[in-house]
Length: 88
Image (cartoon, rainbow, N blue to C red; front, side, top):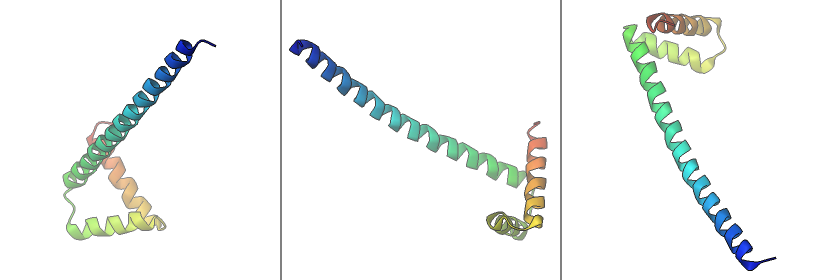
């Protein structure tokens, strides 16, 4: 086999690995930005409901436990109201 073909293939492999690494960085950055935007959307939705700090704390505890029907009902209510407010 010709050494130039091997050298070309090695260079192409190297370039491909570099591109993959760059794309991984770009993907992580995009995922991070998406998380930030999702969090901002959640905060806006909760603030638009004008619930008290105590109610918010109770809702968060219920969501964390995920076991009680009350938590599911509160979560569903908030989700439905958020979707309705967003026109979904």
